[in-house]
Image (tube, rainbow, N blue to C red; front, side):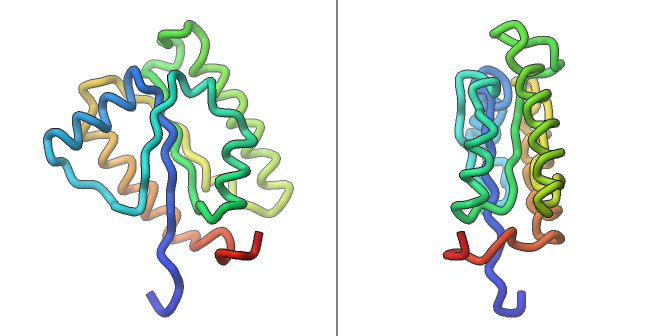
Length: 140
């Protein structure tokens, strides 16, 4: 890259499915981009849209959200569906402010899909690289 900083991506994962898949990827030494950091949540429904906005304001360029598969199969009944609806609305709002909605991605995982989570992480980091940094550090 010509003097431009590399992108930073954060992943918020449901600890029950996506979180275990990410941990299993690590145990199995499945490599994925070092530009993404995962944070486990009890359920992705605990992710408030303000957390995503704060991430962007603090230098994060993309947010990946990993919920339980299928969307109606949540340990907390409807948590992943609630998260989906919130992120859908947040992406609409982001577009109104000139921030590409593609910077937020939601995907669904089951525990054995540790190879899938690595592929999705790598693919998303590459997509964010194509978009470039959301803002220079210190601009917020």
